[in-house]
Length: 116
Image (cartoon, rainbow, N blue to C red; front, side):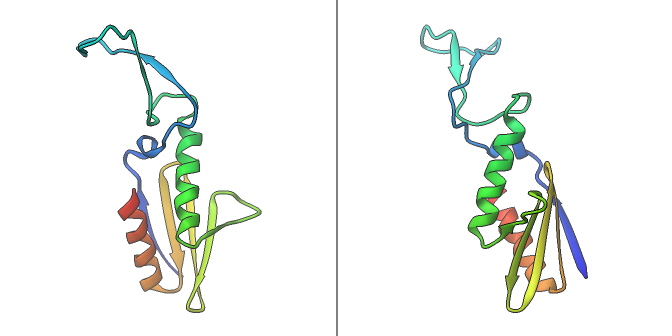
């Protein structure tokens, strides 16, 4: 079995917030209005919900390209293509892609790099 890995460098920044979260305007930022706070549209590092938002974003994308989440481990995704099985394991922002077909591993890794 072969494997390859990738690291999603800015993982938490890919998630889109589903609820309203506001933050104080950082020092040094000048705006043309009288706002005293900003609404976060995207997730950022340091938010309590950042890990969850990232996981939901990753899960949604991986499932959209044909993977199914394991019933036994939500960090394991499985896809069968052309009689070969490809596994994707995720630990926060570290991703391991493994399987017998080097072509499917490379294709999966490319799909992930295209999105993340």
